[in-house]
Image 1 (tube, one colour):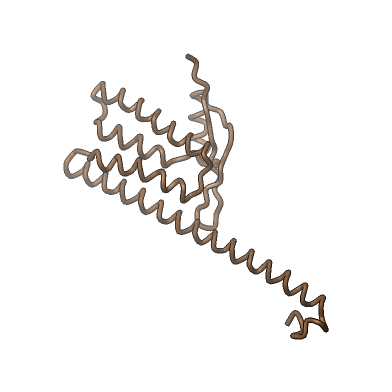
Image 2 (cartoon, one colour):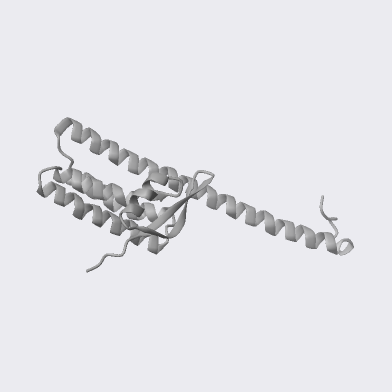
Length: 173
């Protein structure tokens, strides 16, 4: 018991109780935010996983990947990014990486080395992915191709905060 029921007899205890109540409210708010970020993370993993499994099943059974599935994967990234509270610069980096992969895979499609659905699916899936700070092989690969680390952002994976790197490459005209 932090304070007496009669506030006039224990003013210091009342102040302490009010302060503690304030901290309890802050803890409750932080816990609610952690819960909502966990829900958002699991929802995002479910959406991405379900769409990728659907694409794999369709490709296996019919040798085609429907355009609507690729479009749904690309469009669903935006609400998922809002749920994950990605900063606008990181959101733009994911979008640009998807467009770059789309351009590259369409070149492969032109040469007949890759199907059109595969090209669209790769671009849509790329928007969902990042470069994890502990993936040394991926970082080395990007650095060999002239990319450099320009920033990072935190991706909450359950109770564990993961740091994804933002890398860029200067393109000469």
